[in-house]
Length: 260
Length: 127
Image (cartoon, rainbow over all chains, first blue to last red):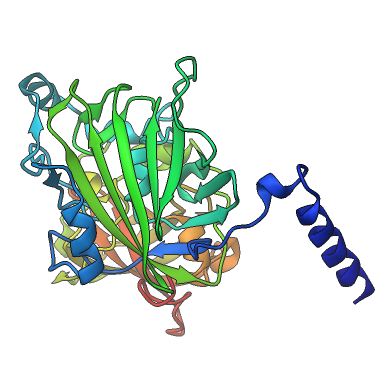
């Protein structure tokens, strides 16, 4: 108990020290914690809830709401009504999905936009100047700068890019640029590093977090793509992913008819 | 060439809900489920997918070396799985998605020990 009290005193003392730890002092908009993807489909594969309807209404005009959020993915040649450039559609015809098990590619993250809508948990930490989102998928860690308003020109492109955020009432609005090229759809079409991502995080209730993403990339498709995801709160933490690149060797060495 | 009908094990195909990682449709019939029994030879519990190697004895005595993968171990931990879930030499029954190409490959959705005890809990129970 003495140790616990000492820890508490230390923690409160640091948090109260002006100009020292106050920038990291916990904030409370209610989104902090562990969130796992809620089971079942999200719009447009089911009717939207009232909160989802409000968020969808904030999409830019003409945004295409994709029906592949969560574990669902489009089959080859299906791009969900998005105006993917003809050259990329043609190139996707030669895409060999078995390359996903190649040792050099197995542990390469598919990109932040795709990772955020995958069926893996996230954990959110909310501070004054930063919001940190840990993705279990490929150990990605997002830093959202709440005290910045522009993306630095010289910021290097990365898997998580550069994110700036602000609160609009009870909604966290995040703008992300400087992403590496990544998976647009898991059927051979990628977005470029010029992609621009806008997200909204909003509680539908204490235990339900709705996240929307809108993104544009003139280099790979026309207009705006959008997704909506639903997460449920859990009493847990994200685990290290620690990807093993040799996984694919076991798949590639499978036996049976046609394999020898 | 062996045909699947000669297998000692019974492959029972039925419609089922999809619970797939992003790469599952590349190798598996994600809308189907099959069950198969065999003897564990190796188990590796690491991301992105755990790998279970097991041996199946066909009707004519041929020993077939099967490979099965799971969803992410970090998700399976929440369903009660661990590196200790399978031991070499142990007989198990597996349910999962059959391979698209007919190879001795499957994607595990549920697993049971020889005495019928389920390993962990089913998908959607605690993940």
